[in-house]
Amino acid sequence: MNQTPEVRNDTLKPIHLKEVFSSKNPRLARCIPGFIYSWLKRVVCLNEINDFISKHGERKGIDFADAVMEYLELSVDVKGIENLPAPGKRCIFVSNHPLGGPDGIALISFLGKYYPALKFPVNDILLNLRNLHSIFLPVNKHGNMSREAVKAIQDAYASDNQMIMFPAGLCSRKKHGRIQDLTWQKNFIVEAVKYQRDIVPIFISGQNSNFFYNLSNFRKKIGLKVNIEMIWLPKENNKKKGERLVFKIGKPIPWQSLDKSRKPLEWAAFIKDIVYHL
Picture 1 (cartoon, rainbow, N blue to C red):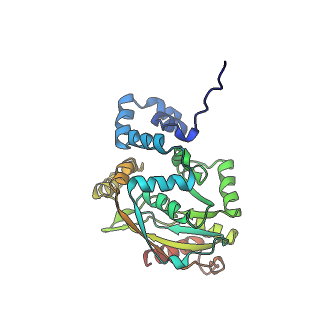
Picture 2: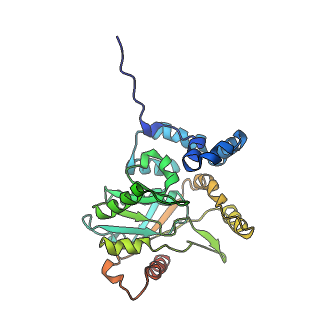
Picture 3: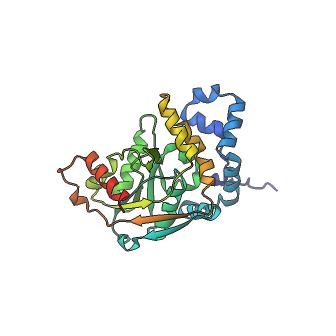
């Protein structure tokens, strides 16, 4: 008797580096020699990531974020929880981005306990984590956004989903001995006004290793524009096992207050300053 072939759950599919590169730059992917791919697999801890996916691939969305928290043994100490808006209030939750991975996962896990519908614009390379497709919205950091991607983000802002944003777009760097975000972009200000969403500021504790920051500063010093330090983030993430993050939640900022007394980029800098003083 013929049997129906088993359909493999797409969220259980392992990540293949060559496919990731091909999706971003097919010509470059063909030029990279095999030994470079092998080296990159070790640097980004790909075997460990795929092993985790094979064991927890059935978990999706907020539940998958919870699984990552359990695996990394991360906990969160929350201050200002009384400032969280009522579930029916549409907001944009904005935060500094100190870690480049666990901080975003921790935000999803924490906010998901209060708001079941979340959307999070992220670097489109993170769409390779298929388990978070229901939450992630792809943003092309190195080219033009497709019409579909732009529409998906606008539809999310127009919906009842709560929005999460890292306005810096990249994780924090060390400057003058201080760990801080790069310039906060104005997008979240523009969208807050357009879609009448209050902004909830959140400060997240934490930092990466000196190696990460030194590599970033060296790369800038020699004029290299490619953020090569980013490939070390998976190793940085593994070093966070067992850590306790601190979230400090500020009072919501009414969208009506974002008037023309400041330009959107100035409002973004103003709210960034609020976050770092929480």
